[in-house]
Image (cartoon, rainbow, N blue to C red):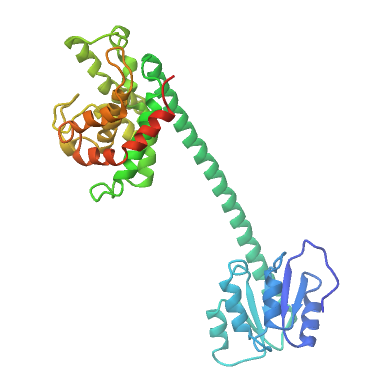
Length: 367
């Protein structure tokens, strides 16, 4: 039994009571202000509450056939689709612990029968208004979350595009690199993923770190933009003096990133690995590399990963001063550097994923 249909924009109140007279009384009392729905059993109340549009408030009797009001309330609160609906117990029971139990199972209020009309209306209005305010706040929060997510994606996209553009700038300076940048960033990611299961690296190589390494790898040779063309593009072996100049591309790369940060007035977190890789990817495990002669663990892990990725790609690629080596020959040559040029554990991980390196090389082959 229901009251005549009020305007559809009014809040909905579900009245649950096994006595028809009580349902008629509450429908009449609420009808001028709310749309009412009624149920005479707990099971039916659960069905109505789960339907759309959901009630904005439930007036719930305690003693009913089948499941009682307390159990109805428990089930409503256990269901994510109905847990947000405020419940007021409306009952003739006046046992000492009834109110305590009502609040324990999730009710927001407790009214004893016989009811006083203005009191019921006041309490219903208060809790409906509270729910409406919560719903509005939740909607604004969701909207804000969506906006933040969209802006975050935009910022990440700008970062990614910026890295790719800068990396491509370095690539255009050296007409022999081809898809070198793309291959090496995929090598680094595959290598990091493999090492993430190693006890020595598991705590460091988390998924966010691996993604940052992947995005930062294209900047490893950014410093080459500062190397004169007569050295960078020389079609032959460099002299000792020219090689000293070429070696400065490592520090030039890091300094370029640091200058950009200084102009921004902030150290950009996502560029941390880019600086490490640019500066230290030519260091060697035994300390014989450049520019600082770092050895062992003093070399940032990001640079140790890039070192083996960079060397592998150089070996399989044709240069004016050398032919392209086969995948198998490149593996053999890299193996000679275990413990001298390369971190032994990083080298061993490379052997484990060498075939994946080969597939990447084929997918991004120079044309």
